[in-house]
Amino acid sequence: MSVFEAISETVLSGIDFVNTYVWYIAFVFLVGIGLYFTIRSRGVQINNLGEACRVAFTGIRAQKGKQTISSFQAFCVSMGARIGVGNIVGVALAIVMGGPGAVFWMWIFALIGAATSFIETTVGQIYKEKKSDGQFHGGPAFYIRNGLGKPKFAAFIAILIIITYGMMFIGVQANSATGALNAAFGTEPIVFAVITTILAAIIIFGGITRVAKVSTWMVPVMAILWLLLCLVIVLVNFTQVSLVIQTIFSYAFGVQAFVGGGLGAAIMWGLKRGVFSNEAGIGSIPNVSSSADVKHPVKQGLMQSVGVLIDTLVVCSATAFVVIIYTNNFYPGYDIPVSPVVLVGDALSSTFLGSAAPFILSAFLFVFAFSSLISYYSMSETNVKFITERKEAIIVLRFVIVAMVFIASMMELILAWALADIFQALMGIFNMGVLFFLSKHALTAFKDYLDQKADGVEEPVFNASVLSDKTGVTCWSEEQKK
Image (cartoon, rainbow, N blue to C red; front, side, top):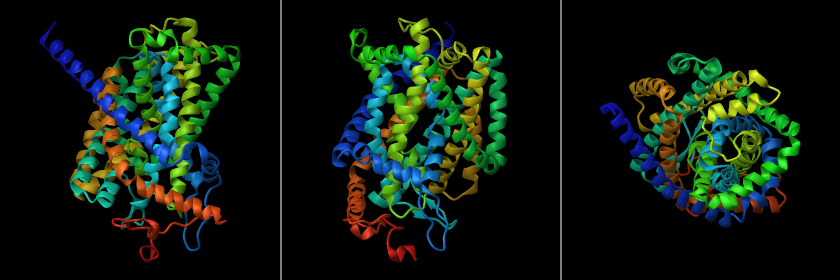
């Protein structure tokens, strides 16, 4: 073994060690505090599902003298950001590493995460700020500074967000897209690594506004097409659906779950991939949802709660069913020797798509990867500006992201995901810890919303005066609105 190989093996071993143990802590925060939110909100994700769907799909009427985006429009944008690589490659990775039982735990954590998403989105709305550009801005850094009064901690979280989303999450997107393209065209990794990097540079340094406009309609369309494609495949193989369900529960609770640490692997991989997919509790969605102009912060909370359920219970499940139908036939022992990207491609190739499957898969992943790049870059830029207004900082950010696209495109898939997992675990730990202290304000806002609905108010309006402590709230009183 060469010195380089020895160093690489040591580094990989260290990353794996950190990844394993940081997720033990993240598990306690994401699941434990998520259950706390579920209890304190009296099961908002289930008991108020009807109202959440009404808010998401019926929209908000425009106010006099100003334009407002509807809940439905915001819902489409947020779902377009959620649905992507995590719903395709991430699900396959969970099955490869944790077995089919991981899918069951993805469902469980989605139910818990829906309550978390409600709380974090509502808190984000309460502590958002209106900037000189006339737009609302918010997210973890804002509610830490405004809600907790901890500006230094807020700056630290802003840096962590930049690393997590601007580097690690973008790295996973680039890695998955180039991996699918390489598999489809049979090229060397560096070919599409270079192409992907050049395109990323063009978007980030020049045409991000134009591309972003295209992605706002293209991504939801592609997400719907992916879901429909999976549903058609499942319907064609309808006789195997009962076996798929049996396989999932068997590997979650049967003998297989207790052999060789299978249960622990299923739980942890279900949590990791579920969180990466629906992004509940790791602070990304509040960065996006806080920009919405609504009458009551709870409306955004309800919308994002139902978004988590649709993302995991519907879209991820559709992908999982397609993959498990294939693996039940070709890898019944679930000793799968291929990468998740190749596995999904093989699963699609075994259907009516045939040899066109790898190219179709690469097209989906390519579009999703670049739409996510735009979203994560925008999020990173917002947090850079939160720390400093110096233009040089934005230029440095752009170069770092472009470099990360190339580096990640050349990485082993497992390494790219492991790095992303470490940082999303850290975001989950810090963000959930902060939300534990600020959740009382979200719950107060929720009670105010329900009270107004009970009094017959069709569209509740929020005022910060209902909060026990209005410190740091800048957008929710009549004086502030003026």
